Image (cartoon, rainbow, N blue to C red; front, side, top):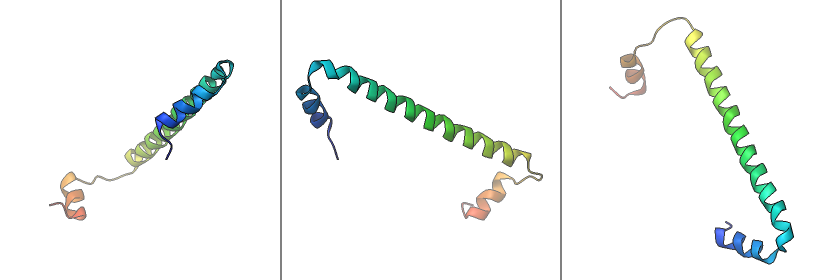
Length: 70
């Protein structure tokens, strides 16, 4: 695993004129992470909406009983 210190040491070895490229890449990774989280959230919402659209009702007590939670 790479440590924060290792990243900072490597950054310090780069010429200062390359730091903007590093910052751009960090921002790209942040945007990518945010996009993945948004996609996962959208999938979760779609699954929840599909479950709500199903007919029937299962009480919390029944779910607990099926899971052995009493």
